[in-house]
Image 1 (cartoon, rainbow, N blue to C red):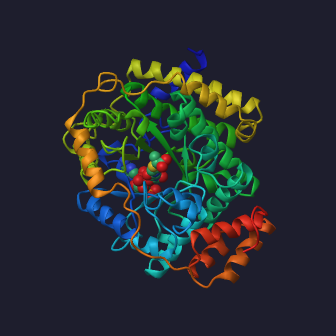
Image 2 (cartoon, protein in one colour):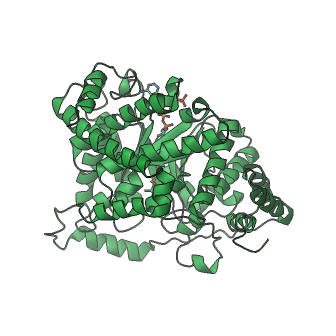
Image 3 (cartoon, helix red, strand yellow):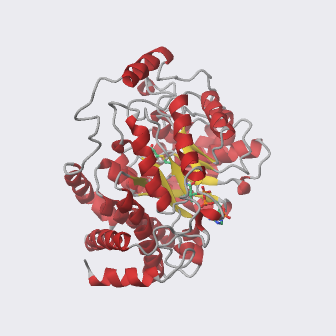
Length: 495
Ligand SMILES: C[C@H](C(=O)O)C(=O)SCCNC(=O)CCNC(=O)[C@H](O)C(C)(C)COP(=O)(O)OP(=O)(O)OC[C@H]1O[C@@H](n2cnc3c(N)ncnc32)[C@H](O)[C@@H]1OP(=O)(O)O
């Protein structure tokens, strides 16, 4: 154990919840003053299907929304694109125009309910559509609340749903961040992820290091655009995973907060308290689930969610028990929501402030994670920073190496029995069709001039958001906007 880390820990144990460096939590009264946000990821079929699921979850006590998009939408392909066949409305909602997104939010007050969008390569387009949906429903866009994932560094490192090369992807992410900082004070413009690298094989310490390295890279990008750290950092948000080792995972969230807070001050000179507070979304992720004997996954996700709650995070998604095999059905979505409510209302986890504070075991694990994560951060810095490590392929190689040493669920896997629930799921899947597709047709507007303006902005190196919003108002589709970006970059013919 590094002596320096142990000293850090001793200093940190002196602090209380709500005090820098926030190891013990962001808020003085923890969940006793406000519970974490119950934010179940949902998205299927078309806007109407997803709207039905959203209302189903909200009616049963969900406190925030989280929207998953199908792969074509994530990649800027319209639903009638020949390469989108078979993927439309699968594993997420199909959204091509303002009208599709308006259907998703029918009957939902966008200035009151916060919405998370798991969208990355097409984050500029989805932001544009969201703004226009707000305008047309009488909501001042400045009152929109929510989070755009918009995290292209981790797409290139791990998740891999990217369209443009690293530098252009990064540029458009920064465009979104810049627009939000200027115009949308309640929107978190990026959800910085260590969790997806963990899903791709990284270990816990690498997950920590990459979350922090990504954040510092976005921040540096914004500094280079002329912003100050205190203009940008307060709305940076984060997403990490949670796995079965309850104590180590809970310790991880403590380490993340203290490392981030300390580095924001030491490396970036942050002066605003909000600039140093790492606000965390946690997902239970698919790699910690098993496809066989799927009901066992309810036990797994409950344990994983406990780790997040013990770690004092802000917002949580619990996977459906069928999620290793299919887009969650309504039943499994409800059970996942109930897992969160049981933890919140039937256990005492939310009744105590900083329940792990003072534990020697947690302190030791935290120090170990910090020492390893700091080593990775030093290594990344020595190699010229994260962008260099991505360009050279070094980072992917490290994640790949780790992927071969990781472990997943074993109980009911190595000794799996043929289970009734699997038969039931398969039958149900076949009967109801796992792939709902989309039922609503979509129409593109007459928007050639708007698309040309967008292309010109790209070519001139200007922020694309203003012309993107104008194109969205004119009913440009996501596919058209994507083509306009590509034309501006010179990777596609002019539109
Ligand atoms: C697997 C899949 C894939 O790869 O496809 C994915 O990625 S799924 C990816 C799914 N991703 C997500 O769902 C991302 C979700 N992220 C978020 O919701 C955000 O970025 C978040 C992490 C910052 C959480 O935001 P939130 O609105 O839910 O919660 P906040 O913590 O901001 O709290 C809301 C307001 O309540 C206040 N507040 C919060 N807690 C307390 C407390 N204990 N006491 C007093 N006040 C409190 C906050 O300061 C804030 O006020 P004020 O507003 O005034 O500051």
